[in-house]
Length: 514
Image (cartoon, rainbow, N blue to C red; front, side, top):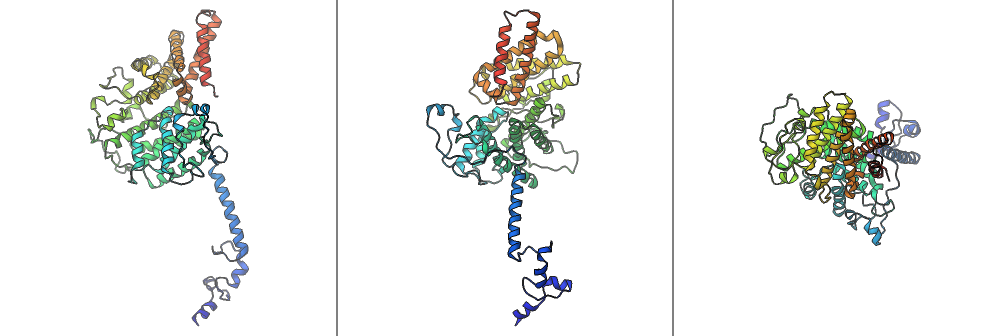
């Protein structure tokens, strides 16, 4: 009896509107008449035509979402990676770098789709990233990254944004292989870039492991620079650089744990602590390296493409010490007499640390000198002599390390070679502005810089770095100008001209894209 009475009761919408209702549930007579024209109809499907319409509308929305997600990326081929076996030809194997030969058997089918890749695939991509990160001026704590990957503590594990950015960078490093090769992963770049950006948005939304967010930003900035997407990379990196300052990474007063100095209180009581205080020496080192990686990417965008630095603080305001060799942090062997700061590179009396500084720190100093030379010339600074003296002093400091640059056995040599190239390029720009008085020194430095790419190892480093390519192109322009002067003056044509032309030809081969 109650069920029959329930069927005869008017529906709530008709009761509120005072309409006559036949009481049928869930479709009353009024709804059947008005459903096709009612834009505010409930989500419940009332008839077959509406169901078909909604399904078609959902398909259209999915297609639009997929189009918008890939709009910011260069259209590429389908990411279907062939699973055919790798060629066993000796010639084919010899042309494959060793780091690519350990391709795991699990990389079949759509292996890239799971949010958490299988451990063998993850290890393979991480090893590729570690092998090529230094070539693109990214300093990585390799052992620390591997320990974090093996940790069972969710707070210590890398954020998905960092992992996806590592996968993205590893895929881009396979561009030296033929596109049809089963080892080539460049077709997955858009996939991992989209995932990394989504994960980075999640990291910001929940303030989750912001240090990993900054690491991922540095990797993506280096990737976008490598792919020639300069404006996109600059826009992406600028916000991350300002976030690094908001996290206080430019004001790490003590490189030791526990800290040897008391950090000053924030100027405002409303200041928000975005990062928790470090709880170990390696966490302090992680923050120092993250900040200087951010500084390096910021300087590269400013030097190579002339963008305004996002870290526009005066060097005196950067209180984070320069990074020491990683082994000193691992052994908790940071000594106060070895602590150095970037602004001291411009002081006339530089105090050299008791122990050798890291090649990464030397590279950071060379970037500051190169940027200072560029800014000084742009602003027409009268006192160029002091900048020249400072740069020459640092060049002499690097001279003792030149032998290890040509060795090619240590990954840190990449930073050392980059430091020498940047320092000599700074001197080239400064002596070029002095006019005839610096002509002889100008040619000598340009010739010395050109001779560095005679080493196949150094040539490989130059081809993989936008910064070094920029410096070598400037060196080539200086030598071409010198060749024109030799031909015009007809002085020393027989003795010096062949050497100049040979260096120009060598630089042209290196700086010209394949």
